[in-house]
Image 1 (cartoon, helix red, strand yellow):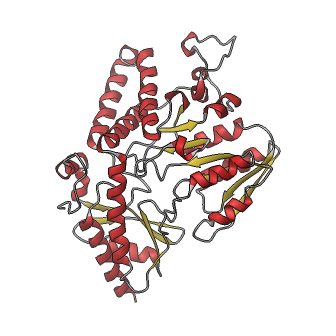
Image 2 (cartoon, helix red, strand yellow):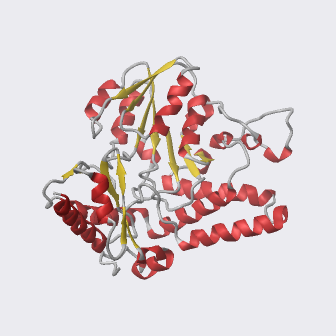
Image 3 (cartoon, rainbow, N blue to C red):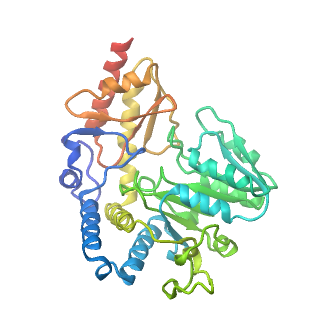
Length: 389
C-alpha cells in the first residue's frame, strides 16, 4: 500500500496510517459504513483504562474519574457537532437514544419517516406508539428518498420527522436544513440519526437547525461499540421528562438520595446509570484524533477517493450505481449475483472487505483508503463480472 492519495492538510498522515491501522497491510477495507477500524491510540487508551480499573477498582475509578469520562466525551462530541456541552447527552447506542427520546416525547400526532431507514430508527416509534396516541407514516421509497415528496408529507399534526443524515443503504445525503425549515413551519420536530455522517461529514447542528441529532461511535468515528452521543436542542430538553431515569439523571448524582429527584441540567438528565466506561474513553480518544486531522479535510479526501471509485465503476458494463450525487463517501451498486461478485472480489493480495445490504453491494471509503484501494477494487469488480457473465 503506497497511499497514492493527496496528503491531508497539515499532517503527514501517509506515514502515520500504518502505525494507527496495521491491518491495512492485509485488507482493502471498504466497509466503514458497517464497522470502522479503530486506531492504535484508541485501543491503547481503552486497554490502559480497563487494566487499571479492573486491577485497582475505585482506587483508580473513583467518583471524579467516572464523571470525568463522561465530561471528556461530552466535550469532544460538542466540538464535533459545534454545540454547547450542556446540550449533549451520552448514550451507549443510537438505538438507546432513540428509544429514550420516543418515551420522553409527549402528545399525540404522526411520526414521519421513510421505508429506507435502518430498523432501529423505526421500531421504537412502533413500540411506543402502542402506548401513546400517535401513528407512524413511512414514505415508501425504492432506493432513494424523494425529498420533494417528503416535504409535502410534513403537514399540521406531524409530531416529528425522523430521518438519517446519510442513508445507510445508498449513501444519499439529505438536505436537513430544508427539511428542518419545513418541519418547524408546522410545529414539528426533526430527529436525525447521524451515525453514517459523524466522522466523515462536517456537522453543525445549530446551522442545520435540527432538534435532536444522535451518532454512534463505531463506524466513521473509528471508536468502539458501546458509546454514542446526542445533541438535544435546549428548548426540547427543557420540555421533556426522560423516559428512562436513574442515579445519573439528577443534579447531584453522588448524593445517592432516593427521597428526591431533581433533574440534572440540560441534556445530562437523559443519562441514567452505570455505563461501559471503557467505550466512552475510547470514543473520546477517536473523536479527538479525527478533530486533530480535521473533519473538513477528511470529508474532502473521502469524497475524492469515493468519487474515483464511482468513475471507475461507470466503465463496467452490467453495473448500475444507485448512489446519487448528493451523498456521503458511500458507493452502492446494483448487479446480478451480488454475493458471488463480492466473494470473488475478496481474493487477491489483500482481502477486500465490503458489504451486501438489501441485495446491493456497498463500498464505504474513509481516511485510511487511497486511490490504489479503489482502483484495485474496481479492477476486481470488472474481472468478477466478466467471470460470472
